[in-house]
Structure formats: C-alpha cells, structure tokens
Length: 319
Ligand SMILES: O=P(O)(O)OC[C@H]1O[C@@H](O)[C@H](O)[C@@H](O)[C@@H]1O
Image (cartoon, rainbow, N blue to C red; front, side, top):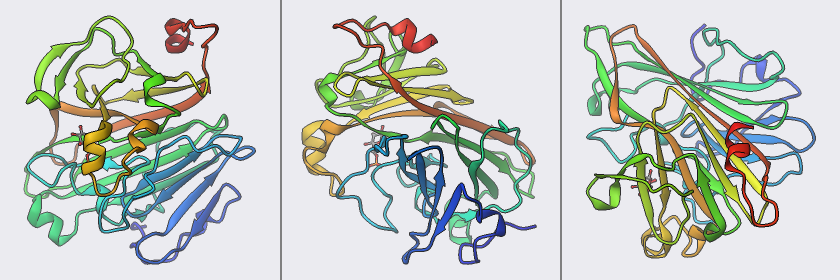
C-alpha cells in the first residue's frame, strides 16, 4: 500500500491504546505515543519532528523555545531532522516539509516490548526536485520504549531512476532541556577532534576533561563515540545519547549574543538548552540508486550518578 498523503485520514493502525492522532490546522497534526505512567512523545507531521518527550513523572525532557514559529518556518526545539544538507537552505528541507504516516513500512527489526511507535515517510515534491534533483524515500520510525527511552530510526533510499547516486549530510538536531547550562557537563567527547564552526571549521583536539559551557559553542566532533552523556547537576539527571550509522556529534549552544539575534528564541533561553546532535557531517553519505542508509538515535534519561561532588563518568558511559 502506498504511503498516506498528508491529508488522508490516519490509518487504522493508529487506533491503538499507545497512539493518538490529533488533528490541528496549519500542518500541525500530531501523533502522541504513550508509555507507562506519564511517559509520552509528541511528533508533528510538519518536519516529522519530535516536539515533546516526557518521562514517567510527566516532566518535559526536550527544549522547545517559547518563541518557536509556526510552519512554514522550521520549529525551534525538539528534534528537527536535518536532511539533505549541502548547498541548500541551512539544515536541508526535511524539517519544513509535511511528512505522511507510512502505513505499510518495510520490516524493521524491533524489540517486541515496544508497543508505541509510528512510521513516517517523506518523498520529494516537484519543487523539492527542482532544488535537489534526486528522488528519495525517507522513512522515519519513532518509538517510545517500555522504560521511557526514545529512539528514532531513519532509513533513506535512493529511488533515482536515471542511475545517479546522491550525497548528503544528516543530523538529529536534538535540543535537550537543562536546568542551567553552566551546571552541565558532557562526557564522552574528551580528547576528540572537532571542527569549530565559529572558527571557519578549523580542526582542533578537545582537552581531556568533560566539556563544560561558559560561552557560545558550535563544534562538530568527528568520529565521536557511540555513547555520549549529558549530566545535569541541578536536576541530578543524565541524558544518555546513543547513535548508530552517524559518525559525528554536533554540540551547540548559542549563548547570550546569538540568542538575542535569533527571532525564534528567547533572550535567556540559552541557559536552559543544549543541542547534542548525532550527525554525519564531515564525510557526506553517498547512496547509489536502490541503496538504503540507516541512522539511529537513542535517548534515555537516567538519575545522575552525581554524589557529593564526584561524577563517575565510567558509570555513566558504560552503565
Ligand atoms: O538556526 P538553525 O538553522 O536551526 O541552526 C541552529 C544551529 O544549529 C547547529 O547545528 C549549527 O551547528 C549552528 O551553526 C546553527 O546556528
């Protein structure tokens, strides 16, 4: 069966106790995944974007700006999908296109314990093809695990019929909600090489300590490990970010000056967010016709092992 068009009714499979389809005007239809107690995930069809992820106490774990703008502008917060990047609009067009529910996705091995998931699909429009002349099918599965963990699996297939390969870069532009950015540490990126977007993408090597934040940061860590931890001292919460098929990790906080310059971002909101973005940036991915690429993001929020001023990075990173 073909993918639903953006305006067709939600397919039958969405009528499950774990899923709710909520209609809203202006491309703001959303799907809500429900887990145990108050765990939930909200996904907007516009952008195929996760806009909320709540733990079992109903606490929001992702940052969304109070000044976020409605479609057709990209939405500031949650997890924008950045694809296909290159000589296009910043971060590609997938984040400001209307995705559809994919009611018959090709099989994807899943943990049978996961009941709450939804499959979305994006195919290029005629206008998109004028801008980026490649035919593709982008399938996105968003799943809420039994323990409240969130995973996003992207499958991108080259469906060009003229034999041409295409190349792209990609990112899950994840905005984490943090209590106070100056109390946050990122572990797992120590001693990594990075490109500094604030210094003309020059290459540097990170020092040996966990990363802390005292000013604007916009770095692409290269060949980053598959697990990175964001430790929020005040919340005593650690986000564990896992990634597959995505070699790099972008770390971004705009800090005060850039925050003021952004129309869709509050002046002080930089204090309460941090982007850690599993990505493929340094080396674009190339797909021949018929080939498919898969990239997965896994997120969980666990109590920090922070105890009387001592963090145990090994415990956080290796369980
Ligand atoms: O404003 P946008 O397009 O959502 O981008 C926000 C930031 O996203 C980050 O991923 C980039 O590294 C930054 O350079 C950029 O400023």
